[in-house]
Length: 236
Image (tube, rainbow, N blue to C red; front, side, top):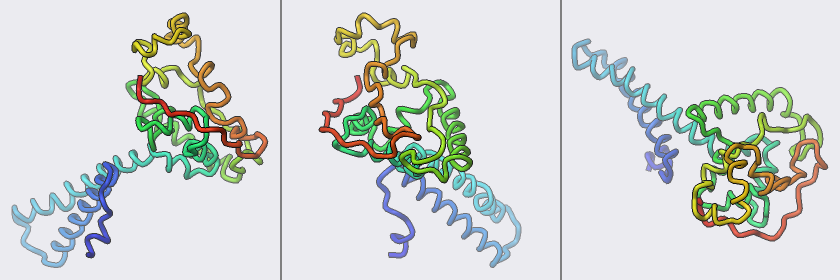
């Protein structure tokens, strides 16, 4: 019963990593306590046990703990932890919203990680640059946005660091897939889309990627939900 209370139920990889970190930390503490209480001779076997208690287990805790923390930062709940992001995350979770963000969030290919999936960089070091930008988000939140209203009642305007790249769309909506090429409008703009001269969001979503009233510095009111749109069937 005590173990069930300490160790949370495992349903996801993130929870498995959390349990692994907790178990490794507990083993390390037990080994250290054993050595301090028993004071055994510092022979080979004792050194091996201490190697696990002071080296292997703490490293395991640090590794799994950091990976678990990273996995949590890809979840929409993490984005919602900053109050200025609540309008965006609430819209993404709204089954009646027709915004591009909400439609994609209803797709099981994105699910609870829709924010990260659409906004993360996809170059070789994309994960690293995304996390560095996340630290910038935290800095600006603490220094500029912490006292602002969630719907732009006051405070500076929220904006992206750089224009939304087509690569974030073509990662799933391949310009080489037959289903994509079968759309007549796509056929005459293929090269412009691949080169980035024409942005995908200029045709798909426009101001409705996120509702306009969510722009910080706007009218301070949440949008009126529209009729639900069918979610995309999957990746193209």
